[in-house]
Length: 112
Image (tube, rainbow, N blue to C red; front, side, top):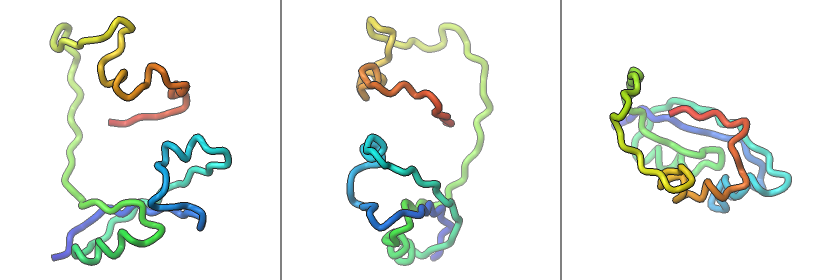
């Protein structure tokens, strides 16, 4: 059975190692050139998806799943208890080392 899938493709030069270092480690290297992904929707059987995922320009293939936007709601004071350390950071911020990172997020856009 064919399933609708999202395919993320990128144009890479021959020096890009698909199984090599992560994107995060590559960003710190001099001469790193970011790539712009191309997002396509296609239909695959499981075997076709497995073969397509081996193409050098395919970064990822994922099934197309239904999504809905969640309507924002007003924050209610005292609704959640958030534990922070003495610096005001939550455990997750500490866990990923963000409080000691030289990167500060300038110029980054995040969507959740």
